[in-house]
Image (cartoon, rainbow, N blue to C red; front, side):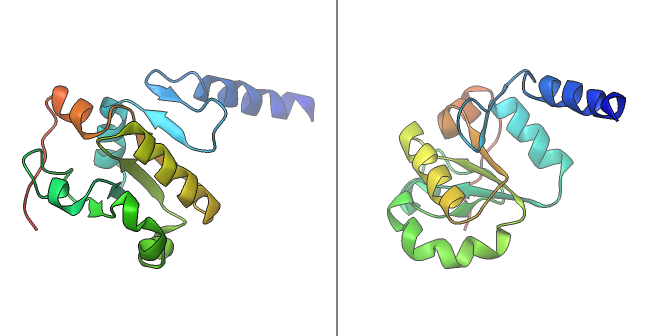
Length: 136
């Protein structure tokens, strides 16, 4: 029985040290934009949430293609709209790191279990030359 558990323990330990991924003491993962981009490209059941104000979502910096605008100031009222995505992987970002973390906490409290925060938010995404869109 113990020999069967060893591969699981080893894989779990390795998963915690993946380059660009941090879990520390929170129930969500924090990833570099490179990892977030790979997740978005490799998985169809991904929901991306932008916690910035709507004017920023459609503004000069744009937003990640396919992202849903849920300003952090409105998350409590808008939570019913995103509850149906609770079982999916949710990638979140903002322009203010504290807003992304606050949003991740709220989603966790609402029962979301697969939350990924993009380190550095939209600015880091753009710094690494990933594209955004500004359309409605």
